[in-house]
Image (cartoon, rainbow, N blue to C red; front, top):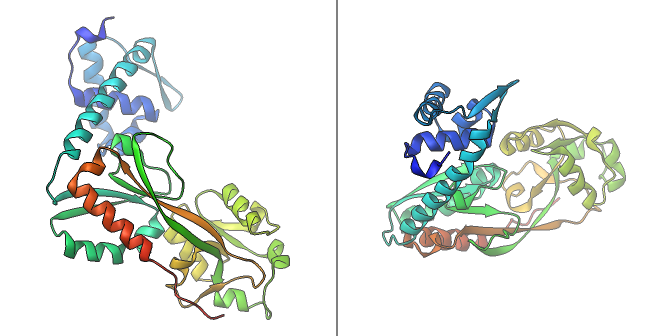
Amino acid sequence: MNWQSITFDWNQARAFLVTAEEGTLSAAARALGLTQPTLSRQVAALEQALGVTLFERVAKSLVLTEAGLELVEHVRTMGDAASRVSLSASGQSQQIEGLVTISATDLMAAHVLPDILAELRQKAPGVEIRLLCTNSLSDLRRREADIAVRHVQPDHPDLYARKIREAPARIFGARSFVEGHGRKLTRADAPTLDFIGFDNNEELVVYLRAFGLDVSEANIRLSSPNGVVAWELVRQGFGLSIMADEIAARFPGIVPAFEDVDPITFPIWLVTHRELHTSRRIRTVFDHLAEGLLRVRPERRAR
């Protein structure tokens, strides 16, 4: 079929594309912020307009038919073109007002960014900030966010990144947990201790071993993909976990867990799309975040 000779509604095409990428109607509806019946109607309307079946249901998933496989590449190309147009238009805007979406981890959004954003409201009161709290990497090229605070360096040429600094992190616990053993803890105690997991327990074990701790996933008896919840479990004495010094320093009841384990550092990167970096609005927020994140330092703490 010659897809290029057929015109159809872009909302229907986008519904089809996201459904193809997500694999289920429920996941696609969440990604687009639509109800599942609305999304289903849009996909069905596209199938009716084209006169083809685009999906087959296999178990609980949707699988593209041959016609769907052929169409999805055309629609993806259309989506990429639409994103480039949107990025170019946003990049030309010189007004310091409007929405800017910042992607950051939930812990950074809750405990580090508020002070920085309070100053931004004074500097640029016309800017509206939306915080996208996620521990995964947002796709800036698809405008999931305008600016991202990341801990890994991006490798795509369309992205502009600035390394802000290296931030120290160590293993912390509630004072009641750490001092409840009647003596100072050392790394030799690690195999017998409980740890609190965040998003990926297997990955956390790798980080803990980088501190020189002999632990396994069996040591992680409680976890939550929500960083704020996981940190609250640490605060309430359920176990130990890794945390940036600048966040842990905000909680008086939290202390470093081990006297013989040195901190490690992790990078803080600020990332945006190269075209968005020419927008005065985006540039203002980007530069303000960079300045604010550079100033953040943990307070000195006594054991």
